[in-house]
Length: 221
Image 1 (cartoon, helix red, strand yellow):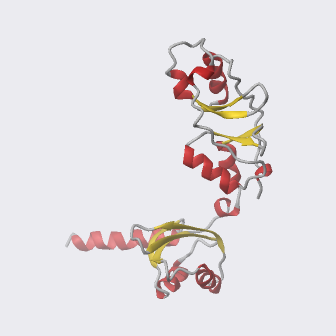
Image 2: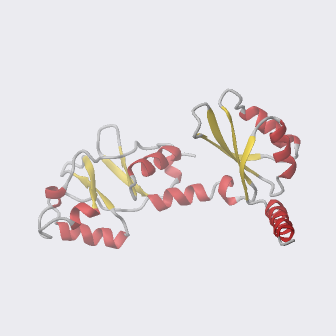
Image 3: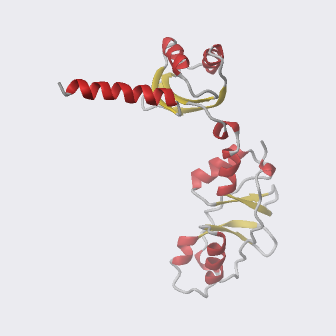
C-alpha cells in the first residue's frame, strides 16, 4: 500500500499571476475547493481556497492577492495512504499536493481517489459485521481479540482504535469476515469487552427487531 498506487489526476497548478476568475473556472471544471499554487521555478507555495477567491473584490486580480502562505498542506512522494487520509481530514481539503524533499511540486491526488483506494480494500469491499467495543486501556489486547475471533472460525479484516469518552478507556472497532457475529460477541463479552454496537449483522438486526416487537406486544397488555 503505497502512494503511487492511488490514481493521480493531471491537474495543472496555479501560478501567482493567474487571475481569480481563471482559478474559479479551473475549480469548477474539476469540482474542487482547492488548487495548488506553484512559483515560476516550480516550487510549491501552498493551496488556494475557493472561498478566498470568492471573497475577492476583483475577479481580474492575480490569485497571489488572496493567497495565504500559512496554508500549505502536502505529502512527500510515496507517502502511505494513511498519511494521505490524515492530511485530508486534518485540513479538510479536496486535493493533496505531492511535494518532493526540495520543495518542488510533483503532482496531486484527489480526495475522491484516496477514498476510492480505501473502498477497494478488503476492510470495506468484503461483506462482514462491524463490532464496536469498549474496554480499559490496560485490558486492551488485539492479539486476544484476534484469538477469540479466529476460535470462532472468522478473521479480522481491519481494526481501529479510538479514545473513549472515559480517560482510561478505548473504543475498538473490528471488521470481521462473517455476518453472523453472535458467538464472537458472546466470547468477547466473556473476556470483559463491552459491546457498544453491532453493524452489518442481519441475524443481530433480525433478533433485535423480534425482541422489540415482543416488548411492544407485551406493553399493549
